[in-house]
Amino acid sequence: MSSEIAYKRVLLKLSGEALMGDDAFGINRQTISRMTQEVAEIAKMGVELAIVIGGGNIFRGVAPGAQGMDRATADYMGMLATVMNALALQDALKSHDVVARVQSAISIDQVVEPYIRPKALRYLEEHKVVIFAGGTGNPFFTTDTAAALRGAEIGAEIVLKATKVDGIYSADPNKDPKATRYSNITFDEAIAKRLEVMDATAFALCRDQKLPINVFSINKPGALERVIRGEDEGTLVHV
Ligand code: UDP
Image 1 (tube, rainbow, N blue to C red):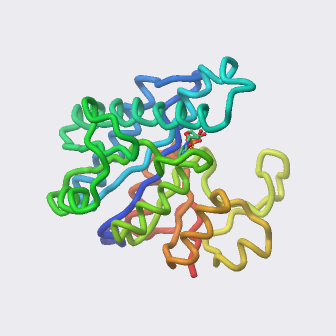
Image 2: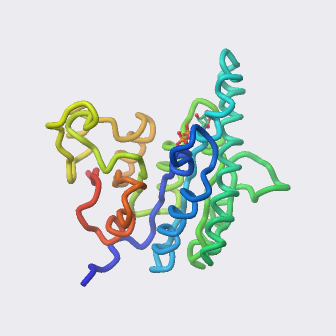
């Protein structure tokens, strides 16, 4: 029999790439549908779920035109890209009968609500999925940092980082066949071994706040649910 739920409130970080499938950029219909199906399942298990969505998939499409651009301007474009993804995600969740609310860190009131912490907390208590768009609202940051920040703000028990690889490896598994996956590792070990878990700002914030991170593969069917059940899936980074 399956184990119980290990986490009551989680922050899920989805990179834009998770929506892209094998396409060069953008949102792949089948991929987003399959992925939201898994997300819907854990929402229906009663887990309070907040999602920080990236924007890399959309930004790839405009990247050639953004070359040589002022960094802050390009970053605002990246933040807008996350708003598009958030709307697509909300819509896809709706088709799986899950109610989601989007809150943006950059003001775009005709389209989505602004980020208001107490309101986000209320939605979570009501078992609505909260999608945080617009990253942190500041250039020079990433959506990984937004995930750590919002995760800490809403009192999430863990940040779940969905990637294309099923955890953190001792070396690049694509290059080194002897590379082994860490089932769990402490923040200090990850630093000592120079393992890249999240970007440095996000990692430092999680470490300071003693907020564990689980890195797992979004492409592996059932992986998200196994993480939620506290099973050995991906890599758990802890204090
Ligand atoms: N971004 C930003 N500030 C933030 C979050 C994101 O400026 O707080 C911009 C930045 O340009 C980034 C882009 O938005 O490259 C998309 O976010 P990210 O690269 O984290 O998305 P992912 O790679 O996870 O899809």
